Length: 218
Image 1 (cartoon, rainbow, N blue to C red):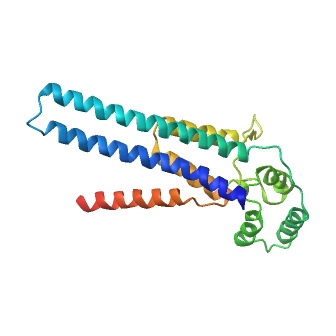
Image 2 (image 1 turned 90 degrees about the horizontal axis):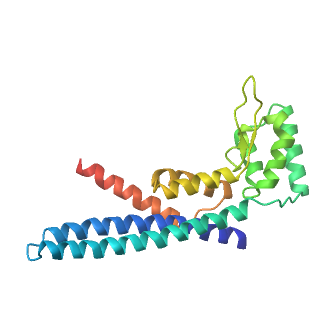
Image 3 (image 1 turned 60 degrees about the horizontal axis):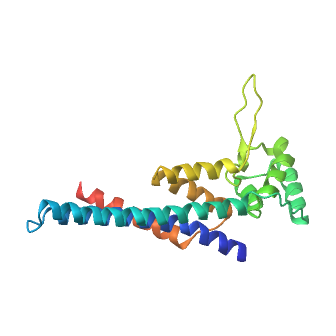
C-alpha cells in the first residue's frame, strides 16, 4: 500500500506540473492583454510589465518542469528494477492460464483478472510473459508492462524493448511541452501500475471542461 501511495504521489506531480504550466500560460496571456489595452501606460511601461510577467511565467515553468522530471525519475526507479519475486500465486496464475487456454475457455476477462494481480511488478510480468509466450503470445502483455518487443520481419527477429524506453518517451514529451502525448503516456503509466492519482483525475476533468467550453463557443 505504501508503494502504491508513493507511485500515486509521483504520478500526481507530473499532472500537477502540467496544470501549473497551463494556468501560468493563461495568466500570462490575460496579463499581456490587460497591459497592452491599458491606455494609461506608456510603451516603455508596457514593455517593463511584459518582461516582469514573462519572467514570472518562465520561473514557474522552470520549477514545474524540474519537479516533473524528478517525479519521472522516481517512477522509473520504482519500475525498472531487477527485483524478481516468484510466488505461489504467480505459479498458480501461469498454470491457470495454460490450463484454461488448452481447454479453449480463456476469455479476455479471465486473462485480465490473472494479469492484473501483478500490475506494477515489471520483472515478474516479464517472467510471466516469457513463460506464457508460446501459449498466449506476447502482445497481450503490452497493456500491463512498460517493456515489450519490436515487430519481427523476415530478416530480423523481434527484439526486446526495455522499460526505460517508455520513460524516455515521457521525458521527451515533457521537454516538448506536448501535453497530449504526456497525458496519453501518463494514462498508460497509471493503468500499468494500477493507480489513479488525484491530480491526474483533476487534470483530465479540467482539460475536458476546457474542451467542452471551447466547443460551446464554436
